[in-house]
Every structure is written in structure tokens, then in C-alpha cells.
Length: 289
Image (cartoon, rainbow, N blue to C red; front, top):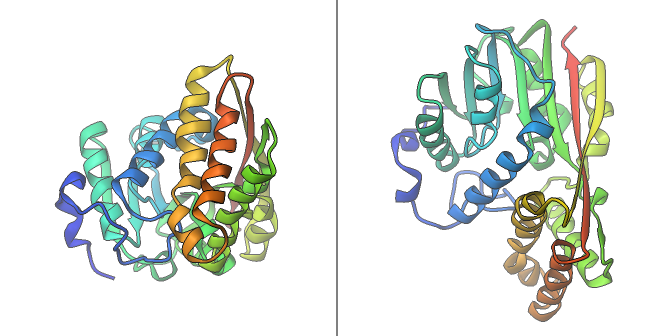
């Protein structure tokens, strides 16, 4: 693991393609995906980060920081922390550095380009570990958690946030829309991940050796009474996420272009007049004994 030499480049100077040093990430690495992640983080910041409080001076590791969409909210909610942000993707890390430089230029952040399974830090290097939407992409999330436990001091905490696509309920209900969501779940499974991982957080953390595991749902419900949430979450986060796998779903033989587009059109009705959308994230906090 070496420092990411690409980390000093501005994100908009990089190609808008899916090439990267972590090609199995089901959503890809385009600027469109980076914007979607930012929309998601900004829309859900209060919901997901509420209750996460680290004292100033705490050594915090954000494992799998991605494009920094959650990083800036972690820094805003916890001023004075000493953050190490790590990611396997040099492309994403470059975007994260640029985002933090723009939104939190005075923050104390160290950047690390490398695999969370093989972090070069000594045992017990951190007081707290934070990861959001990371385990769902790992072939062996228990092994990933065990690797993170090694660098967490005894008595330190880990906070894990994951979604679960099986918790998506919408009106009007549509078999075509449901099948389209299922294509994303199947593609993620083929890539070695699990789009339904949120429901498994307690057993995963327990198997990795953590204790005092507490898991709570963080539910999003959007209807036309809150147009900003409909736009920010239903349309620009969830529908955009499903829509982004169109080419892969067709190439894998899961659907036809026409059927996929029909499903997306039906799913968009949940963001229209009379539509409703529900989704549950799961937030876990556990202790390294």
C-alpha cells in the first residue's frame, strides 16, 4: 500500500469512466456517481450522523471514505478530531481530498490509499472507526471488520452504517419497478457484495469479535409533503442508483433495455404526485473489548 499519487488532482480533471483500481464496485466511479453520493450524503446527513459524537483530539479512522461525501459531514459534526480517511480507490480519494479542501480546509485529515484488510497502522492506533456503505461491497465483511478491530484500541468504538435494498417499499407498487431494483441486488451479489447487508450487521460485528453491539434502523419516508426529500433521496439517490446499473443489467442478460427502462419509469412514479417511498438504513455501534 502506497500513498495515492492521484490524490492531488482535481476531480473534474479525471475521465468520466469506470476504470479504477477497484473495478468490482457495482456503481462505478463516474462523476455522475460522485454527484449521486454527494446528494445522498447531504440529504441524509442529519438522519445518518445523529448520535455520532467524537471528542476533539480523538483519533478516528474512516474506512472506505470514497469520494468524501460522508467525510465532510463527519468533520462538520465532530470538530477537532484527528481523522485518517482511507480508501482503496485512488480516483475516489482524489475527489475526497478536493471535497474536504473546499468544505473543511482547516480539518486535520491524513489520507491513506490502500486496502482496509491490510492497513499499515500499528495495533490500537485509533480511538474510533467509522464506515458507511462499505461492508456491502466486501466479499467477506467479517474479515474486513476483524481487520479494522485490530487497529482500534481496546474500549474504542466502531460505527457502521449500511442500507438494505429489501427495505425499499413504494407506491404505486409495480412488478416492473421491483424487478429493476432486484437487478441491482443480483449484480451486487455477482460482484461479491450484498445489497441486503443492513439486516446482518449484528451477527457480522459479533462474529468479528466486537461486543456491546447495538443496531438501530434509520428510516427514510418521502412523499410530496417534503419535496426536497423526494428530490434528494427518492429521485436523485435511490432511483439514480438503480438507473446507473442499466448497461450492466442488460449485458448480464438480466433484462432487456425496454424492460429496464419500463421499470425505471414505474419506479419514478414514487417521486411523482401521489407517490411515496420508504427505505431503511441500519446504524450499528459496537465496542472493541
